[in-house]
Image (cartoon, rainbow, N blue to C red):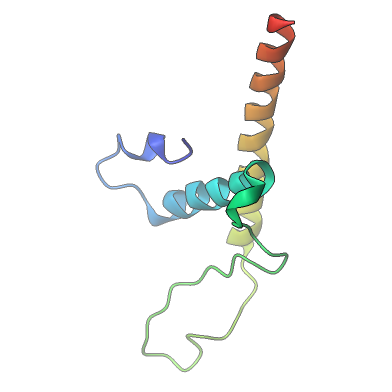
Length: 91
């Protein structure tokens, strides 16, 4: 559902794939409680590992994490609004 728009692209940017995956995980955490999937407060730890640098495994704050969170909140807000609109039309 969240990754569908990426399939139409020749080669999506990894940044867009990560955002879609993060959104899917947060969706499952909030709405599919029995799955045991989620994001803890200090995750995602998003970093490209070169596997040849001393600090490959050191955690560093990333502005991209906030970008993922903002993207996810916006996507889930739109989805919630759509469900609420449909629900109000059914009642």
